Image (cartoon, rainbow, N blue to C red; front, side, top):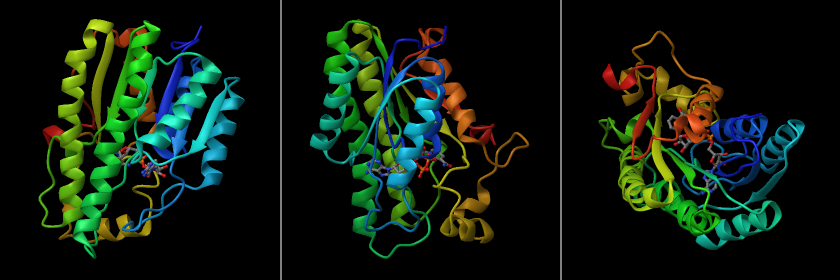
Length: 271
Ligand SMILES: NC(=O)c1ccc[n+]([C@@H]2O[C@H](COP(=O)([O-])OP(=O)(O)OC[C@H]3O[C@@H](n4cnc5c(N)ncnc54)[C@H](O)[C@@H]3O)[C@@H](O)[C@H]2O)c1
């Protein structure tokens, strides 16, 4: 029997990258998936977000495991959109056990419009996590089965990048900010056996890093990415490496882990 057999997971940013890897991994371990993704670019973006085709592909991969998936286009910045997808999923699957607040955006290079970059990053990475949680938590409590909430932060949520650029400042602030949210809910929800943690990946091979803007950043020795080095001899992790850890964390094996900031960082933070 799979490690999350019969459970239901709600995942944001599910169309590609880590969100897709989590969906496929949890489905292969027996969970049904409710997932959403914006499948569109934000105004200030300097790399592309996922597409509707990506979302369709995630659904296909989940269903290939034999599990079910509700996959919808929605924007985590807006409570109503998140709520609509979640309500549809719960009406179909009847319960909620796992929430992965994973959707996020980054802006490292440009600074065409600092205010817009700040607003879009904070509203996606921090307000979006808050929305995913406040939409799902009441039902999780009502179900009475406990649960596990994982917020995807970053190494930048513990070790801030040194930068004058609004995008880097906003990314760091958003990823630090969710630790406060995590600790607040970890304390409040422990009475219901609902666990809440943040994970802090180092660089991961996804659309966020595999694009022209990021490639130019890594080629520039003066850019802050030049100082991004893992201690372990690996340059970048696979999305499945993060999914391996998330599957452990949300399963029974992780049952006494809550309120923690958990690095999946190849030693980036000790370097
Ligand atoms: N890739 C890395 O190196 C890395 C490292 C540390 C942390 N992270 C974090 O991991 C999480 C997942 O990112 P990824 O690496 O899979 O990158 P990704 O860009 O491939 O995936 C992010 C997904 O979120 C979606 N999204 C963006 N804004 C949204 C919104 N407003 N509403 C709904 N969906 C939205 C995108 O369309 C995309 O599918 C993010 O929170 C990111 O900040 C990434």
